[in-house]
Length: 88
Image 1: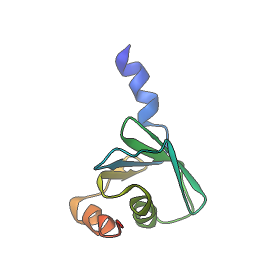
Image 2: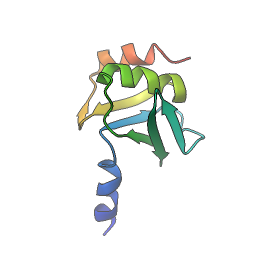
Image 3: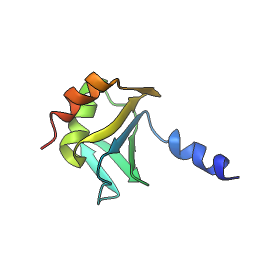
Image 4: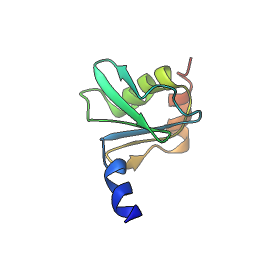
């Protein structure tokens, strides 16, 4: 039963961002895209922006990420490091 309830949360969005520090807000907006944050992970639906741009924008709102994925594909360490360079 536990895995059945966890699966929908993981597939809640096209993008998934895991901040190093859990976000204090339940949602953030980046360039018109709503990110919903729950249990230390923020998710959002597909945007017209490129995946790397979406990563950079969410980093500017929630801080450095320990993981980011788009359409189920995780960013590699180098791409994630470049994205995290945008953290304010």
